[in-house]
Image (cartoon, rainbow, N blue to C red; front, top):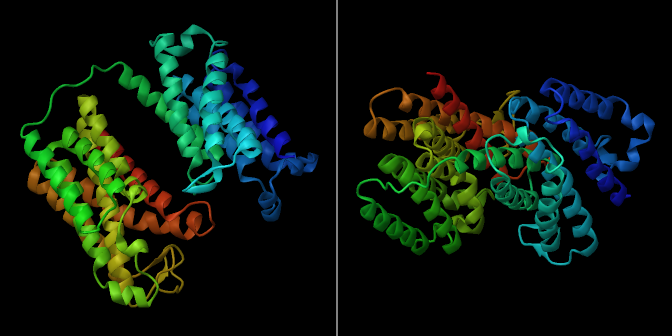
Length: 439
């Protein structure tokens, strides 16, 4: 029955043929109709046969609802440039479809971070997803592809499918029918933008000093067992991006987050251990921690270097994301130690210490202190403008939003702690970056 479900999953791509031929309003309308059909009618027509066992247990299939819902969102976001929504649809239909079919049948060795995902399934996602997408795109009018030639789109598709295949292998991203098309569409848009940019050759002043400092602190962090060797390499790439994009502001913000956050995690370690609330692996961070907390900031830094006209807004995104990460770390690490009364973040009913979504006055104040420390760093280095205010607000918002995700999607099993942290930094940074673009 899983094969039938995946076959239907792939076959739905046929409805995408209207892209570029019909107005975007029609595509959005069709996706809305599909969502309502799946929500209200499909089960009455025997749609349960396409549900997985866990879907039947909870009475609905999240993926079946997510499929048209995310397409509705993408065609609205890319109203004027629906090619990116189409690429997202192809990644979901072809990549996830073929990857799932082949992975379940032939997959033996699985990824360490996700035992449900196999090497061969991920490989099939990339290879067959890329081939099928390229063949499918050949059916569409040339006007859909904007100013890029076919060679450019060839490499965009290969890169997008690689990123999407990796994302599909990660646990705790709500649902593949949400994460895969969203990441694919945004990646395609980003790569298209970068394809029109010259490769930068301008390095900030004192770059040699910064590189030596980055290398020294990477080594110190590994020596102090604050991060694994592989994690430090990823952290180094994040640090380099922040340096190239935002000079000492970016590098200083990353160092503030890492060392202040590490000290907060280590503070009261014995007491946390007695409660069973200490950090895993004795507080040593790894690749996933580096990406979950610093990935958004690092990406914003690299983009700020490649696309200088985006630099000011991306600086808010990057430092705002790190502000949210630091505020959340302070809130959770100090809150669990000094909190007197813990309540539900939304309903304010009593909860136990350390429960996802539980907040305390003391923890909230610690979170505000973390946000203000990042805002203070911004003000110290760039006192002009309101950037420091937005960075502080991003951190305060992140403290609250992380708890909301924890009590809802993480508690329900749709997200992990790492994906909650990534989503929190991404949304906090992007929200206040968007506000900065309006000021």
